[in-house]
Amino acid sequence: MCLLPGHAQRTSPAWHRAPKLFGLLVLMMLLPAFSALGQARTSAWRTQTITHAPAPAPVVQGPAATPPRQLTTFERHAAETIRITNAFRRRTGLPAFEEDPVCSQAAFDHAQDMARRSYFNHFGPGGSSPTSRYQRRNTTGQRVIRVTENIARGNGTTPESALRMWLNSSGHRKHLVGTEMNHIGVGVAGGSCFLGPCTYFVQCFSRWP
Image (cartoon, rainbow, N blue to C red):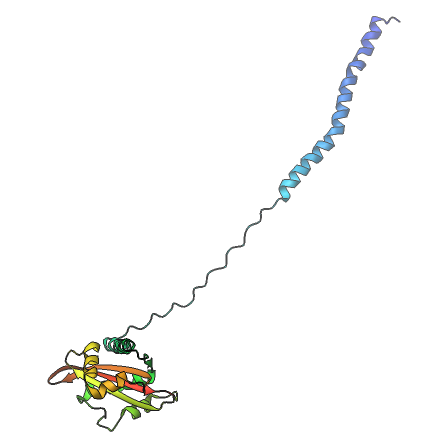
């Protein structure tokens, strides 16, 4: 079949437009899919969350611990006297004395009284005795069978020299090497004697049941 030249010119544009229309149709069909894909990706990023760790609870500082009270020179002498007395007993095969807080208080009372009033005796000017001084300090009702004491004084007296004086005296030594007493307390005070400074030592011994 032959076509006239004029007829070919009228029908040619339709054939040329067909591929363009087909491509436009395909693009219109794919556009919703691309749009949905884009929305899905965008939505995925938008809904992603980053979990933050909770802030740590504030640390509440408790009250500062009170530092232990510093011992006085006389309190250190008293503690040292107990230590070396028990060391002596261990060396001789005897059991160490247990510490008696009431004995220590009574011993400090007597040492301070002697130092203040410059006397040297187991009995105070007012008639106090080792037993009565212990009873006055025994506010907890500790039961004791017997109370006795050693005393010493001198210029520059130390725990070591006081212990030597007691060990060299038979009356005082018996308390240190005996087994009748099982508790100890020591008091030390500074005063005067022999027209000069003096240190007073009191060893209090008690027998607990």
